[in-house]
Length: 235
Image (tube, rainbow, N blue to C red; front, top):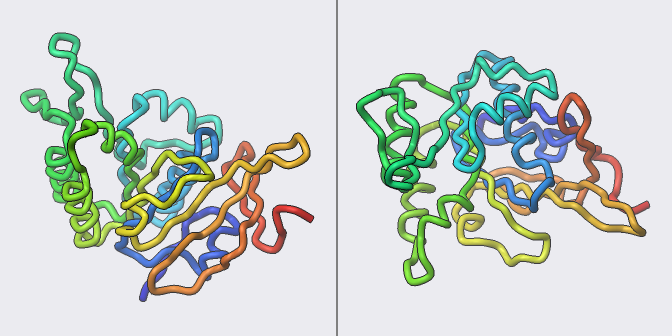
């Protein structure tokens, strides 16, 4: 099976070459763990390899994403950005569209249709959805998103686009349903140790490939994320 590099130094060593092409993967972690940076670094690697990418941000404004990523020297003009906005009249959240006549409400069905349209017109090889937590918030306590999210994961498994989906989670949480449905799970950690916060990463699962099962330290620099695959979190 063909693997593609993530573009994150050290992570590809842990993955023994990279991610299997065309599959959906989960990137999970708490606030500030580096999920958005990692996923954008993955798309920038695609740009360097002449692979088109899409970044779907369901939480932050795309202009803010562009400004934040400029801190790493990343020019996002080679990446298609899609975000949501709140209609000032109805208060409903809607997906931004390239058509002035179309303002689809933000729900899972419309999100899938929008992705289908972008794939048809843009032919991406890499995609990020940031985040599945926002999709979960579409459902009230009495509804069960399992069927809809299963539909999304099955759809992403068929489109031949390597996709990273972020989920907000704490280090103590039990695995979410999406983690069982994905082809792999990468967990980003912020570990408190003797008054210091250590950023780290672990691979929880990776179907169809062997991988490093240790938790490894990482560093977020002005050039992105670097993982140290030969070091342990605690010496």
